[in-house]
Image (cartoon, rainbow, N blue to C red; front, side, top):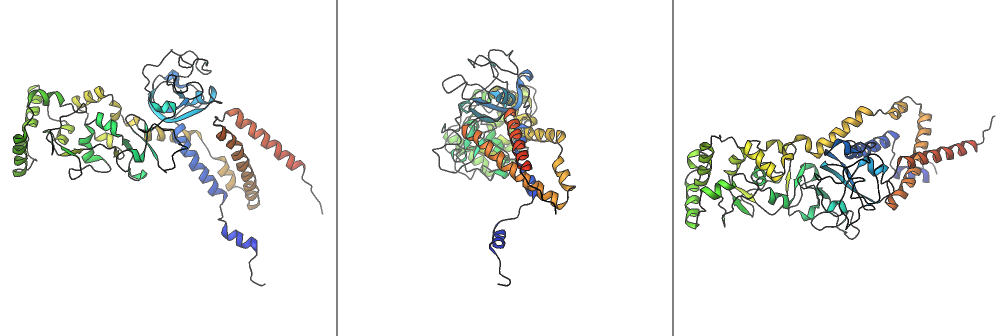
Length: 425
């Protein structure tokens, strides 16, 4: 019938048309994601000689250090060279870690890249992630028994990974926040609640359910004394007695009658603290002290933080001492963030990488482009099937495996070409 469409025509309408440029751009995006995690780490040299690396991609080897043994972490290069056929847990990135590969925690393995290691790295920190367990639920990821779709989010302080549903507060959209601090770390670093009222992506306000805090230490229900995360702790406890119920009413009345924006309306506790700072010759230049003069809320939840929130943290002498005591000095280091690590990896990769395929494609005729598309599709299909075997077995793909694949692929290609028949007219 005239104008009728054949099956091939209808099929072409159903299937989206994807150009080689689209495929290359998709692959480039995936490559960039991999570079973000791995690009900042050396894939050929063991990182041990660098000492405690500020941030690097890490792995744990379940074959060498199974659960019940001592926890240990290995660098990217050692995961390829020394543990290529082993079962590994990918730990993403961690800070201030020195490669353990081949030290006393590995009973029957010597590092091939840097065998002369100390027996133990005392500065390393470990958690259940090194046994493949994550979150407060202590489950593996991916979890074959967990059918609930959920994303895992890493705490910027303890660097453990948590299910979004186990953080006490629904996470914002992934693009709306840059870092997360888990519940346990918010309890340990309680000074962050004063910042959360001003900086957190999901603002924690006094209208929410919870305990309203201010520098007085007076809450709606009870007196909440500053915890370890507050460098005012000793002054408040020693110099000023805890107000009773009448004192609470009296303070609240003062706050109702006169705004708390001027120095004349500061509470007795804050005044006493500031007097001591003046007596010791220190000036009131502490951002944290100013924030604690305002009402803020403290809850049993994780908090979510925007880009560059760390730059807003106070760096006065007292606060820096507090960070050191809490072992969170890294919060003041802009290069500690995962984003800084990922950006470094992307820059390093971009400097070393050119794109000859795209340059070649642009110089080809239409027929040559079609032939290249066919070759590319064959390569992609066979490489995907080849790599699937490694994924099913949970083993790492080594350089030798990739070389073997391309040798076999070239051999098949030669057989196909040799078997073709050419006819001349």
